[in-house]
Image (cartoon, rainbow over all chains, first blue to last red; front, side, top):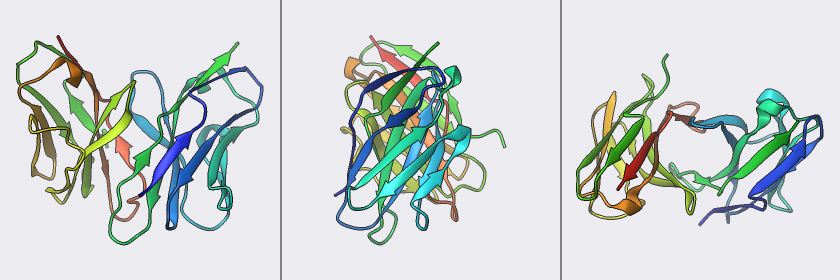
Length: 115
Length: 114
């Protein structure tokens, strides 16, 4: 079984400050990892994904995430946030155990950027 | 492409009524997913289809929920009879092979059952 834990339900941060949204996963096999963003009244859209290779993954809008296998983490970071980054962010995991395995989403972290 | 299209965007109904949510996936996508999002439970996968065939419906909460995909460009999620606890935002998403890892979400249907 696979699971995702997002440690913070809400993260307030001032504009132009750095931010880190934390994500830990659990799986007995190799995984794919994702971050999705949901703006108000919209569906989710992919921010970035880790499939293999370099553990540092760069995504859209200046976000990046680092896969840490030993700590089973995939934290999302941005060095300087903008008001437009205010949204809810979802970490997700898919185990690679043969066939198509469904994606499990975390509960979400609401990022509020304060002017 | 217009992306994943869902209708209606908002639905208000009374307990006991039948509700039908509709989804048009992105053309050429082989997989279609139905999710439910609530404050308490977050985003839950209800069912997914591959090439119009239901593969995993273990997330469907109970027999009141049913989903169909009669062709590659259309799917429905039906709740009959509806209950207040079904109030949520329902998302449809699709993905393709290759690129199966990325799901493309529709804007969602916000359902309120009174």
